[in-house]
Length: 374
Image (cartoon, rainbow, N blue to C red; front, side, top):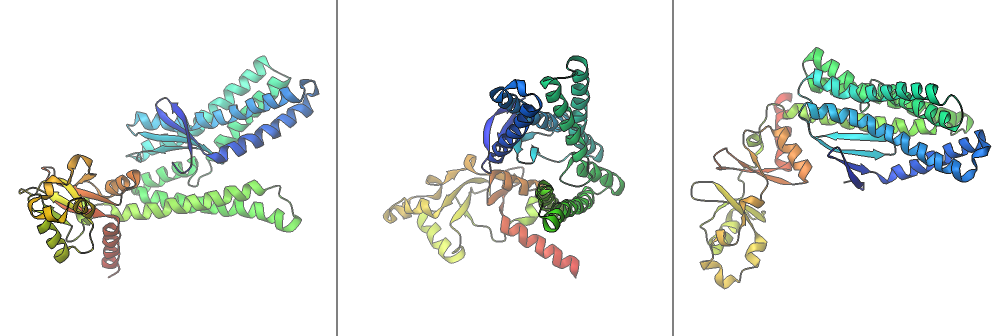
């Protein structure tokens, strides 16, 4: 999963750590342990490092709690959570799909900051009640501060931050179009990205100071992800109303199960020279399997005339399929999730419609754009 390391499950949700997280963990540990050692010399270097590491882990625990807030609300809405990942900029809860209404999208987005604000209040109260001073007070203080900062930073109204998702939900509610919400919130996110980059670059260029270098990284992060979100939303909008059957490849490579390998080879040479994999149907047009050129090579040519395709094909259970009336957006997501290049499109009764390729989806969108332009 993009170089991440799976470390277990959290409430049934796969939990991953990106290698960049270890760099930040070490940086936070060193930074805070040195601060504790300077503030409380009686601790000693070793204990200061241990407390610094503990504080760093608790800080990331706060990030995980923030992402669990999003996840639990999504699960209550019947939306699966694919994973939670910690990386250099914090955490990310990956959901299987979007909320179905703007109100539901709002509650998923606001849940993370609410959890962070609750943790800020709890930690502040505990610090005042049991540890008014000393190392424990310092640790509780920094944890409370980070949770407050995490909530406020994520409430910035631009994608991919939580505030951007809240703004998206509000625009969706007003316009009735979720994609306009994404595009608008993405543009706001890009504005904040440029502001962050400027705040990082100006001190560097004018004074040679790296004091705001982190702002530079955050700015690039916002620009890239906001741009990707807007681009994806435009594609989603173009796919609205289209089904998997609309994007089936013209003259899909389909052969009958009763053909011999010799007949298949002759037919391929005449009709499908550029194809190496074919869908197989029975006499009623039902999808029963798939066969490839490699299957032919595994059989001696002397036996081709007496060997039928159904004897060498892969069974349907091993094929990725999608219903013909399923939305094209669902089909695209299935292709991406399973890292596939094609899907077999079938009707509810199992009759094969044809092959769905990524290239055929792109061609359909191109034709649709041309028609709109005309």
